[in-house]
Length: 248
Image 1 (cartoon, rainbow, N blue to C red):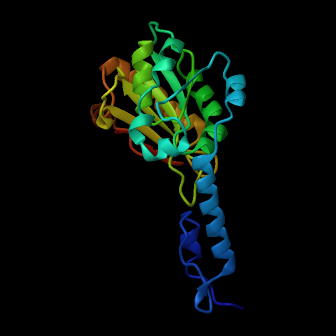
Image 2 (image 1 turned 60 degrees about the horizontal axis):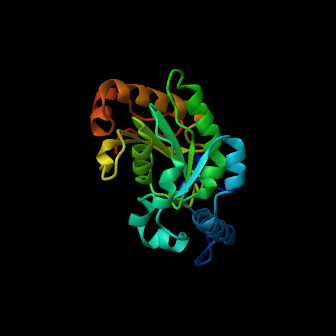
Image 3 (image 1 turned 30 degrees about the vertical axis):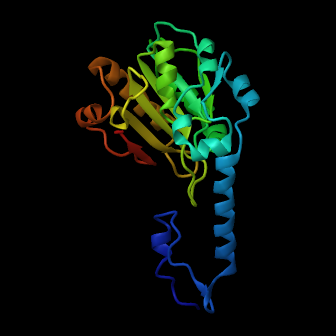
């Protein structure tokens, strides 16, 4: 019998690539191919476009907007343009007495949005009884801060941006949520709360993330803040199945 692999128990506790074997002086071909596939999947997640028709069908009444970045190449090279709403989109956003607007943004992984945004949106709305929620907004070539322009234009007290997170070599479809109280251009990241690592294969579940988001949104309205101050008052740490980062 071959000797017991001392790395096996550690591999069960992490998705990281640890204790990889060798074939002579090189890595095993299976490990090399798996790594190359993961790298290609991550690249695809960054460059794939949102299926806007499918999202609009799943989210009746959704409004589509875009940032000042003209294309994906410019978006990747000029993060500042991805943070600003294109002026042509302002007339599309109705202003009202909204408690919150939920923005679905492609970010750095359209794959994450297509896999997770709609069920996450539904889980969040289900838990926000009594909230005056604006029509959902779908944003392309978007960074997190684009939600500030959207929330300010619509007059929403809160803006929650559901965005594709930067893909890695273990997870390429992870969704994050960034919550901001009184969103406006120039808001610092320390003024936001983030729930991250939302996906269906070992990440935070929609239900758990929805519970966290609903708690944060209710507390944000009650206390009049988000970000570091809300984190320090919350006592919420960790997320069990995934990772919750309750700070900017």
